[in-house]
Image 1 (cartoon, rainbow, N blue to C red):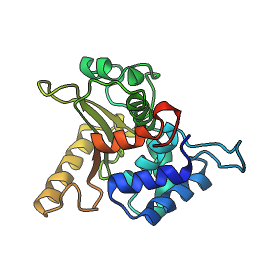
Image 2 (spheres, rainbow, N blue to C red):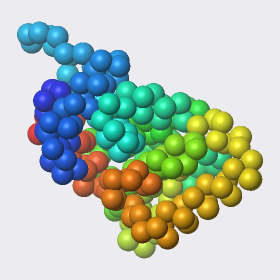
Image 3 (tube, rainbow, N blue to C red):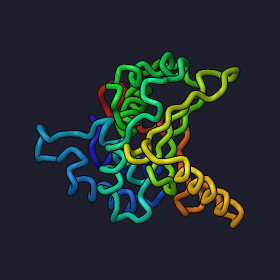
Image 4 (cartoon, helix red, strand yellow):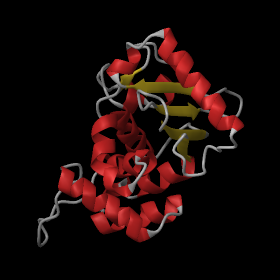
Length: 215
């Protein structure tokens, strides 16, 4: 079974971030109630796919390390954009997401995706987990490509208040993204516009839970 130490080491290596930074996020989540508490001895609890999802979302979505727990709490309040309008290919490719409650959160979906790959067999050729640090609704996106011949199939998540926002709000958001792009802000430069991880990171985290042991 994977331990918190296993999780932080695998996460740091997979996303190429300093181990101490990842550990800091982990401790913030522990203090905030978003990571399984480690006891003592052989009965000590181990980390779960949910713990891995919380840590990944905290790292991707936090402007600064101290915001880890706040970020996870915010993304745990999101809802699928468009309700039940799920892309058929994603439903077929990730049954663990299909089985979730219609009002599940972005964090629930990330957990399901990690669980899916931990189970072993998967038809998914490519996958991405994205967060958007600019949108008022702190949007999250999960997208998969079942095979080379298919286009991306995605599900977007937003806070309830953003889902109820006006066209004027959306126009302001789109203008902000354009202004940032014109200013030379890239999706990976630490500005928090969009941060994402690809399939290899999800697979690395899933390997911690495959076969009931850490790898």
